[in-house]
Image (cartoon, rainbow, N blue to C red; front, top):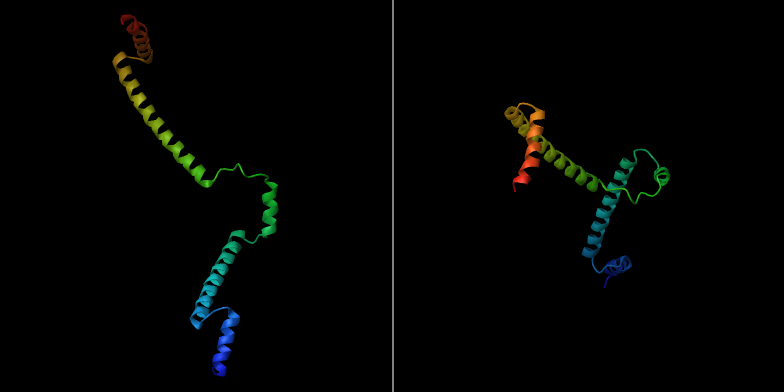
Length: 128
């Protein structure tokens, strides 16, 4: 083995790799991880919006135990469910109003509608 090959072999051994290809692969992986770290640091800086992380931790500590706080997904799911229920109730209310309007037209007034409903509830069970 000549001197250059021996130096290269010792260099690769010090790096803990078996070949130049392995060293290049590790170098590329390192560059990728370094880039990921830089992006994460930029994101953190952007999220902090000029505030210090320790200041944010102090502010968070002032809020106390936050373990019972619902997640954004839970809140969104509840909101969707509530809106769906509200829409269903609005539809039912519209149908009830339409029926009431029909009864008012048929019976003449709200009082007459109530009287007819009362009579149905009183006399119909007696017929059976």
